[in-house]
Amino acid sequence: MKARQWLTGMLAMIMCLMLAAPGASAAPKTITIDLDGQTLESDVSPYLTAKNVTMVPAGVISKGLGASVSWDQGAKTATITQNGTVLKLKSGAGNAQVDGKNVALDSSVQVRQGRVMVPIRFVSENLGLLVDWNQAAQHISLSTTAVGPEVPVPDQPSVPSVPAPTVPAPTVPSPTVPAPSAPSIPSVPAPGQTTAKPMKGVWISTVYNLDWPSTGSAGNAAKQKAEFDSLLDKLKAIGFNAVFVQVRPSGDSLYPSRIVPWSKVLTGTQGKDPGYDPLAYMVDAAHKRGMQFHAWFNPFRATLDGKTTGLAANHVAVAHPEWTVNAEGKLYLNPGVPEARQHIIDTVMEVVNGYDVDGVHLDDYFYPSNVTFADDNAFRTYNPSGIASKADWRRDNINRFVKDLGGAVHSAKPKVSYGISPFGVWRNVKTDSTGSDTAAGVTAYDSMYADTRTWISEQWIDYIAPQVYWSLSFSQARYDKLVDWWVKEVKGSGVKLYIGQGAYKVGDVKQSAEWQSGEQIINQLKYNEKYPEVEGSIMFRAADLTVRNPGNLAGLLTFYYKQ
Image (cartoon, rainbow, N blue to C red):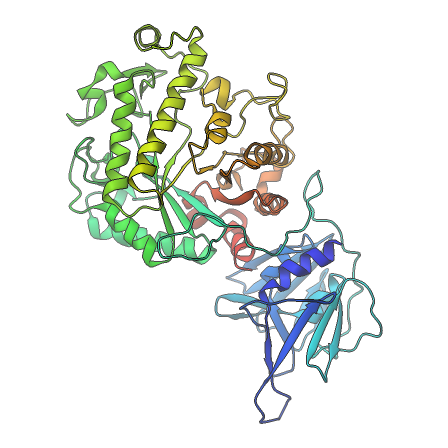
């Protein structure tokens, strides 16, 4: 029953409640809680107000019953929406609104230790939960069906209840999404961690100074450090536990390299020393906050345009133009040239050997899609296996690179996680019967020559994080159908699956209606919980959550993550 599943997730955080009888001086007693006879334990406890009202974290409502929960920091108001019913609870107010009507409350929403707390009986009665309070045993029994006369739990005893609606399935487009289960899903542990946690990652783009550093901080080390600290603090407050920072935007670096020049994003001039080691600072800053740091590399992108003017003398496009291809006005390293592939591996290994990073991360910049790529000469010159098809040869080049880089990383530091975030569609079912039920115009296998299936089956990578940047109702590439497909791909392989999610689309007027609410992302996260194979997600990108924050998406994620 969905209510039972929700409550398991909701009250997995509740272990005990220290309760003293009103006016008594004795030590508080411990209250135990169960759901349909199952004991619920957690390190997060509710508490009792002066008016004898039991308060529990509001974020758990989002986790269960498919209800939407949001927090307006300015108005100090929590809004809980489900099946057309809207509850509004304002901090300090003596009443709440239920579908626009005022209902008196002894205690409304409160904020304690960064958690928004709501009265359990008020919310429970409006969401269809039955509560039984055993005074002698100091025990709360929560049930999804009637178990006998309901005895009031110490919470809102005098407030008239609103008729409880039938508990609906989560409001996620087809297929129906089961409510989440309680156990945590393991992920890549950060240094010093002993308990695996779900991946709650976010990409931090440095190219074009998108997320960090700001253009106004060019050449100012102190300002860049302060900006990064502030960014991490905001992301951690939302609930993220890992950052994937772009350290090689375009054939350059955000660390002192013997091979490639300093990135332009640091000072405004490529090759100019910023006066400190940004990567060392960022790794340390992340670890101080208990966050993982994954070094994100754009492997084959060399420049953002086809020009070499303004590039440093040791930039690969200047030092080795024979390794590059101009495709639609951008320079790419040619994956068919063995020396070019090794050049990238060498730059990555500088980071692996020199820094305490938790992971090495590649995005989908392999071969550019749907453009002419002039590699006929390389096809003739570097084809020792005599592969007849250029498409197969290109895939072989990428496979060699993925395998060789993984071998180098794991040989140097076996505990460093190595993963790739490819385009979200491998192949369409109309092209390949084993592909996904999609009709995408671009596919990883045919357009970017990324043979992700081989990477997984050969276990060359530790995780795969497909960029599934579509909604649950987008017919050409539905989010749920793609998650289903990727789950089947990794099942039994030992390769972890994280889902890349398009937070950047939320609130964008150019996107379709379903993207105008942050609930699209929350519903996607809930869908992920259908599968134990989905061990977390990575959001693209940081500024969309910390600066733009459409529809209070950061607040929605805070409720979802911190329950």
